[in-house]
Amino acid sequence: MGTKEQHFFTTYVDKICKQNIIFMESTIVKEVLTPKDVMNLLGISRSTLQRLKKKGTLIGYKFSNKVYFKRSEILAAIEAGKEVVAVQEAA
Image (tube, rainbow, N blue to C red; front, side, top):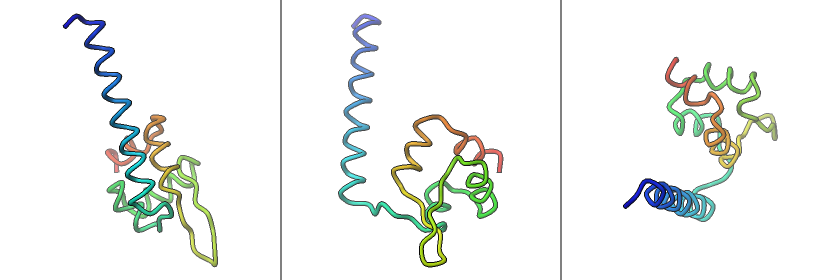
């Protein structure tokens, strides 16, 4: 397989995998996460979560004096290359 074909195949497989992951997450996994859920998902501390929220990397939504996060927005931030993973490694 040539380099162009290999790149096309890799890109195609990545696209299909991402579509399947999004489908599975939307049907199986809950969309609204507590701060504890986010910390477990990303493997970060509470202070790191607060720092990401303050920077605007992650957006929290307040409801009944509690803060919640949207799973889709967290995954979008990771895919967009925001510093979620970089901050996680530095923490």
